[in-house]
Length: 221
Ligand code: 5RP
Image (cartoon, rainbow, N blue to C red; front, side, top):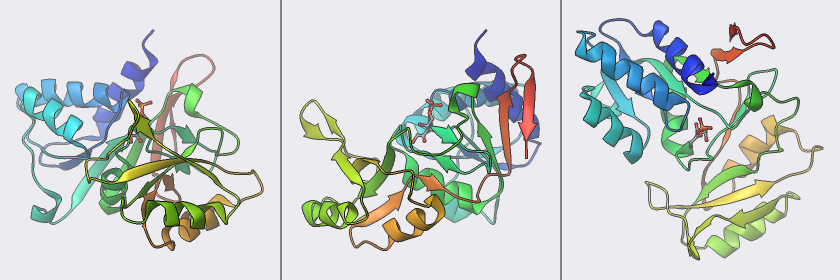
């Protein structure tokens, strides 16, 4: 049983003809995008807004018409995965490095749908290290400010070099103590000069598509 495929494809049922659709990034929403590609071939008329270069390439291969977020009046629905989801439907995202574009699109969408296998559902956010996107300029100064909140940031690296996002920025993967309130943390982090965005998505999710203990599809609102 491919849980990611089941939840990814289920979310596509929310997409109707004529909609502008935010297309997330990752291995779960991948199945939503593949399904949308099939429906487009069968005549579904949508415009997609990709949240990463990776998703843009996939959508183009599948023939999904794309549009820039600056060209549309509204985004009807955005579908995306998550690294962690708590019972308030707050999220940690950014494991795939696309958090900035994902958050811009999720915030703008009339409906934000999260596709999450049961392994993503948690009591408290924070077992997964929180991705924080930062400008390369002054990165060590930014790191010092982040540490002041009791957070431990580790610069994401690929083959010994800093990982670069689609926006040319770096990412700190941050562990933080349970005592920190995630709603406050989201705001505090973004007040640090050099922090571009963080992967806490608070009060943004409308629906989570997941599976219950019996592996039935559940919509959590
Ligand atoms: C990318 C993300 C992804 O949505 C998140 O990492 C979940 O990915 P996956 O579905 O592959 O587990 O936030 O920046």
